Length: 139
Image 1 (tube, rainbow, N blue to C red):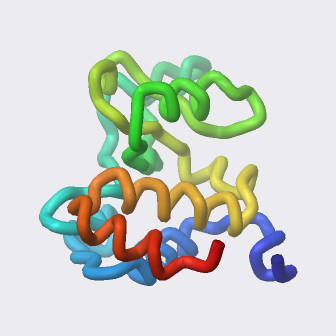
Image 2: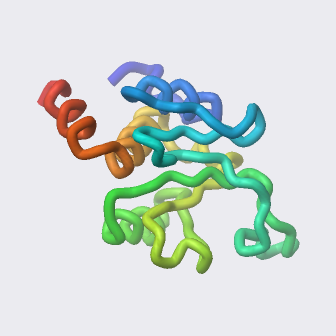
């Protein structure tokens, strides 16, 4: 692992990491981009919604980033681990996604963010694409 991977993650890293994955389509706009593979979004920046709000002020969060995950078990592991900045809301019950506030992204290292982005891509990529990507990775 390099010092580059050890440093705190930044929002800008999401674009770099997501577009480094195979066959990624970038949608949305500069303020709220989304990243998809095979027509399925795997990471996106969400606009404010009343279901995700600051408990101290009651104001909707304006900096929510959504990452898809492979399973409910993975989702629960991320949101229940107090060492991670991930959370969920009732709106996401039944959906395989975790939320992260952009302001908290520095609680992850760049390497940790890379793993989350790769896992999100794998969760949404067509099975053959995912298998090919895994096969090409060193063990």
